[in-house]
Image (tube, rainbow, N blue to C red; front, side):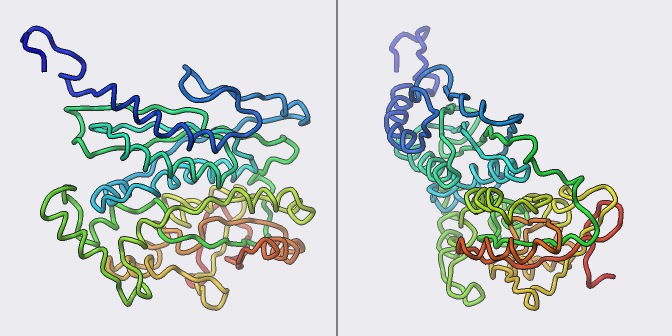
Length: 370
């Protein structure tokens, strides 16, 4: 602290630029591990550089961008002091969205707003981002760490991400291609993913609990206990399981002979099945979803069942909030279903039929209500 009351440094104001520099040094190797051949240079410049030369081989390359955050799942991560996986959530929320158009994610940037930067803490967060980028096959070409003293608690932070991908226009997926009779195939989720956590936090009794307080310590101990309803898993582990990244199996499918029949893809994110599957439908087509998962080989993760039961949600409320075990859905002609299923199974995936399409008005309906 300066002895001169009129002399106030940036550090006096709460911003530790030296610690920020240490944080950058701590993540350089993680970032470099995500590089693709198109990456030029490294982090530290004023912009991330990525060669677009490969796009010249495409007939009509279309760049597709996406941006998102992790939402209030971060509050739970802060309460539990577990920050290694939320970065993967951030990547997943962005790359899964652009994947719905058939796009390959090329590069990713992140933004971390935090009350007080600590290099080790920041490295945990960014490691999750880097891990997510490697799973998605995209390069982490840059980002921003913004220290917000006086605006956020020292241990509080928020994340935002941005990705750019590319697809050749003739191969771009378009919901307008969906027809009555098309089949809807689902791929399993890893749990709640990154949506509905404002409800989740209310259900598990941590809404309003401030991380670092005695009350938070009590809640943390409760959440780390194994539960029979979760097959012995703890709520902490189940609720912080990272969002699944579907990029590699879906791109492999789309590049295969079987994948030529895919009409549309839906990422089941905020708004659940009801408010996301409809985004992959033509205006004159409805999706008829069969909620009898057991009969369809469709397993709802125990943690989702637990939250739904504890909240007393109706089936419609549940399907409008959570992915219900189907994190991504593929729509294809019925004659292509077997080939697409076989291709996914050959990759080690466990696809299942979710429902079918019928003439309608672009909405999701449920078979048990028909």
